[in-house]
Each structure stands twice: as C-alpha cells, then as structure tokens.
Length: 198
Ligand code: ATP
Ligand code: MG
Image (cartoon, rainbow, N blue to C red; front, side, top):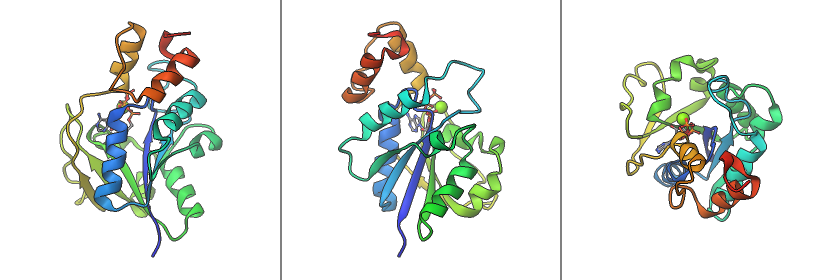
C-alpha cells in the first residue's frame, strides 16, 4: 500500500502553534505517514498587500519548528520551483515524486472560503483529498462534497492565532512565547525578522 502524505501549504510568516497543531492532528486522525509543511515561494494572493519575509527565512523558521517532531517536515519544493506557488503544481510534483502515495491537502476554514480563486483547482481535486481544519472566525465548509471533493474533517482546539497578529506583536515588542515554538523565536531574533533583535 502506498504512503499517505499530507501537504500543509502556507506562507508561515511566521509559523505558529496553530499550524503545528493542525499538522500533527491531521497526521494522527487520518493516519498519515507524514505531513509536509510546504513553504510558499511567492504567495501570489498576498504579494502587493504587504511585505512578505524572504522565502529562505520562512523556511528556516519552519525547519526550526518541526525539528524533532516525528512525521512532520519542512519542504522547499515550492521555493526551488520558483515563481508563484500554485497548489496544482505542487500536488502534481508530489505525485510524480511519490507515484504510489495518496495525497491530502490540508487547509484551515479560512482557506476553504478562497478555494474558488485557486489556479487549476480541478487538478487539485482530481489528485488529492481535501482535509479541512477548524479555525476561529471562519465558517465551516459547505458544499465541498457536492462540488466533487473527497473530503476529510479534522477538529482541533480553536486556536485564535495568526501570523498577522504575531507580526504585529513582534513589531511592537509584545511576547511571542507559547504562540510560536521557542526555536522559531530564536530564528526570528537571530535573523532580525519583524524588526526585533536585529
Ligand atoms: P496570515 O495571517 O499571514 O494569513 P496565517 O496565520 O493565516 O497567516 P498562513 O501561512 O496563511 O498562516 O496559513 C497556512 C495554513 O494554516 C492555512 O491553511 C490556514 O488556514 C492554516 N492555519 C493558520 N492558522 C491556523 C489556526 N490558528 N488554526 C487552524 N489552521 C490554521
Ligand atoms: Mg492566512
């Protein structure tokens, strides 16, 4: 039987406990062999709206976050591919690298609401099962199965944590502790990200 691989895509600017809780619970609940935290190269839906930290810095934070976490790893696939990061390209590349694997694309409720704007969404739907994770401030998904998705739902404790809030905290010197893993805070300080420690 092939491997079961989860893909949790994100900007991870910075990665936080909400991302990691989603990753480990999806892995556990669905019996995934591993979950890949896929760091977006150019998050095309975010560029222009705000400054996005360099991809290598975001990758370094994710690598620090998953160090020692079994079955969760950071991937630089989208960074190496370059250009805008489309999930359709990522699942196709992952399917090529792991031909017998079953792929699961993990998203929070907020992202479900934006699925209609994804590039070549039908290609994602053909290849992967969608895994939706609850996130406060958003509606539960509706009508996905009707629209042809293979769907799994994973429930986690509601964590009202966002990278947007954390960037604001960092910039104003408020604590990141316990919202962001300690090794990630070290990377933020060492690299002087979000105008702290640098
Ligand atoms: P930003 O505020 O910059 O958009 P974010 O906190 O939403 O950052 P992203 O990198 O945009 O983080 O999210 C990556 C993925 O993780 C998305 O699928 C998102 O829904 C999910 N996610 C982020 N935070 C949470 C959370 N607190 N609970 C559940 N899922 C989350
Ligand atoms: Mg987001």
